[in-house]
Length: 262
Length: 284
Image 1 (cartoon, rainbow over the protein chains, first blue to last red):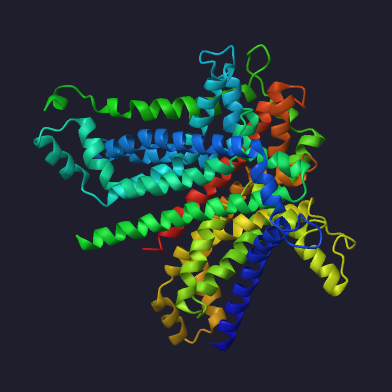
Image 2 (cartoon, rainbow over the protein chains, first blue to last red; image 1 turned 30 degrees about the vertical axis):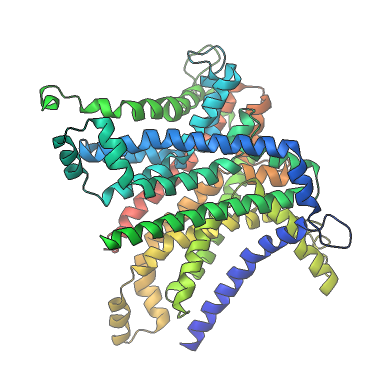
C-alpha cells in the first residue's frame, strides 16, 4: 500500500515538474527584458506595438463572427436531427468529427485551390472574401467542439415535448428555435463558444496560408525577430486559454446550479 | 400537419449540408482527386509513385517517428498520471485540478507552446541557465538541442500527456472494484491483477488512445514551425512550404503529399474508433 502511494506521488511530482517548468520558464523569461532586474518591459513593448493591437483585434472579431456563424449552423441542425432525423445522427456526428481527422493544413490547401480567383466562388480574390473564407474555416475547425457541446445540451431537454408545446401555442420554427430551444441550450452554446474563441485566437496555419493579419501569424513573426516579446505573448495567449476554460467551468457549474433548483 | 403531406424534413438540413460540403468535404475531395490527376486532368498514379523519393520518404519517416514517440511516451506518462490520480491512493481533491489542468493543457498547442519551450530549454532558457549556474552542467554542450527530434518530442508531450489523461481516466474509472477483489481472493498479487485482469481489459482503450495521439501530433504544424522554422523537414512543414511556394515544383505532387497525410491520420483515427468500440464492451 505504502509503495503504491509512493509511486503515485512520484508520478504526480514528475507531472507537476514537467508542466510547471515551461510555464514558469515562460513567465520568468518574459520578465527578463531589462538587464539584471525583472521588469515588465517586454509586455510594455508588446502592448505598445500597433501590430499587436491590430492583429489581436482582428482575431477577436474573427472569433466572434465564427462563434455566431457556428452557433447559427450547429444549433438548428443538432435540434433538427434530434427531432426529425434521429436515423441521420451517426452520419452528422461523423461529419462533425471529420475536422479532427483531416489535418487543418489539408483543409486550407483545398480552400486555396478551390476558391481561387478563377473558380466558381472566387473567395480568395478579395479581402472580404478571404475574411469570410477564413471565418468559415474557423467554423469548420471548431465544428467538432461546438456540435458535441450543443448535442450534449440538447440531450438534457425534452426536445419533442417542448416543440409540440410551442407549436400548440402557435409558434413557428424561428420562434421555437430562438425562444424555446436556444435559451435551454445556452450554456452548451456558451461552452462551445469559449472553446471556439480559444482556438481562433491562437490559430496559425489557416490565417498564415490565407495571408490574413491574425494574432497567430503575428506571434510567429515576433518569435522569429524578437527575444523577450515572444515569451510575453505566450503568457498572454496562455492566459486567454485559461480564462476561456475557466469560463466554461463557470457556466457549466452555473447551469448545474439552476438545474438542481428545478 | 402540413409536414405530413410533403416530406420536407430534409429542408432543415440544407444549411449544414451546404456548409459541410463547401468548406469541409469539397476542399478535401479536391486535394484527394488532385493526387490522382495529371496536369491535363487525366487519371494517374504517378503522383503517388513520386512520393517515394528520398526527401519525401525521409520527411514522412521523421513525422511518423516523432508522432509515434510522442504518442508512446504520452500514453505511458499520461497513464501513470491518470492511474496515480484515480487508483493510486492520492487525496481525492487532487483529481479535480488534474483533470481541469489536462483540459486546458491539451489546448496549449501552437505557436505559444513553442515559445514556452524556447524560454525554458532554449539556449538562454530558465532550465538551461539554472542547470549551468547550479550544477555547472551545460546541456547544449552535451548534445541537447531543442530544435531537434528529441526537443520537438519533448514539446509535443505538453499537449499529448494531458490528452491521454483526459481520455484514459474514464476507462480507469470503469475498472470495477469487484474484479480486483475477485482477483485477490483467488490469491493474485497486485502485479498479477494488472497483468492478467486489468491490462487485458484496458488494452483496446490504450491502443486506441495511442492511435489518436499519433494522429493528433501528425497533423500539427504551428508548434513545429514556430520552434524550428523550416529546418525540421516533417511532412506538415514540407506541405506548408509547398502551399506557400511550390517547393516541390509539381502542384500535383503537393496534392499527393497532402493525400498521404489524410491516409495516415485517417487510418490512425479508424484504429481509434475500432479499438474504442471493442473497449466499451467492458466499460458498461
